[in-house]
Image (cartoon, rainbow, N blue to C red; front, side, top):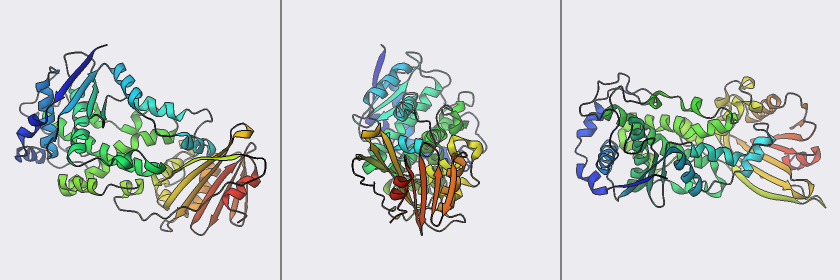
Length: 437
């Protein structure tokens, strides 16, 4: 199996320094489009652009690393290993070294609220998405890995991919990636999505600037104009598709806004104080997050309910649910994002009854910030009504009960507390939702 290992030297990148010449080149791109940061009036072919395929020797990669550092106005600190692999081999390496995040809690939530089929293998879906990438940056040891169709050649798209991965490596060295948040410490998947949006948004911006400075119009890949959400695997549940695309789509919009307002200094400021929630990524403002209401499993004798974990649910995930109740975009609620912005904290907890054939008990606990036209309780009610149109819905006081036949969901709202519990029996769902407290 072919394997090419090259080292991009820090010295080569630092030699160019930050003279301001490339800053002038970036400024020469003119006004940039909102969100995408593509030039509104694309410039003519840049002087000295390398056309077509190029040799993949170390000199070319050093030049690429220098270009990335000059555009980003940062300096390399240490050497970076570049690994060029056949596309299939790249996927194998990513799968081999990647440690998937615990996804069982999330999968059970998606099934319980009707967002995914019961047989969904979420971990496999995430790995498939990861291994379909054209490039990857690994922290330890630092490596930029990219797919290469033909040995001895680098196409314009392959160089664009490397520019993207080199941006990750450079940011990691010079300003520091928010690694703890990215891996989702303490099950905070919303913070993880927000951190990934910063990192991927920066790389998406830089690859655009690099392409218009160093590729001819003919060689600029369609990737620059591509709608990332429409390019993901349409066989996956809507929410999983949206999650896969979020760091690139919304991340680019966030970083683009910062760059247009304050250049790379503003992007560096984002790294100094990374977004902690997807709400912050989407709105550009920090959000005060309250603790979601506590939910507890009923301690019925003879039934062994085991807490298998919890994870966060944020604005972005709620909006995706509202976009496709029951995984059906035709059933979308009106103004899904505006509804989701009522969020002021959210968490899902899952228990399983191992004595009864792996039966699940799922509780989604949310806080409402009271700042939107539609209360969060009403949106959760409308979402579950649309997701399970055949369920028998009854409302009494602060509870709404959805009898689905094989399970029951109970929505309990008390002030700013919103709890949705799904259980095999109505009484269990009522107790977990807090209806009997």
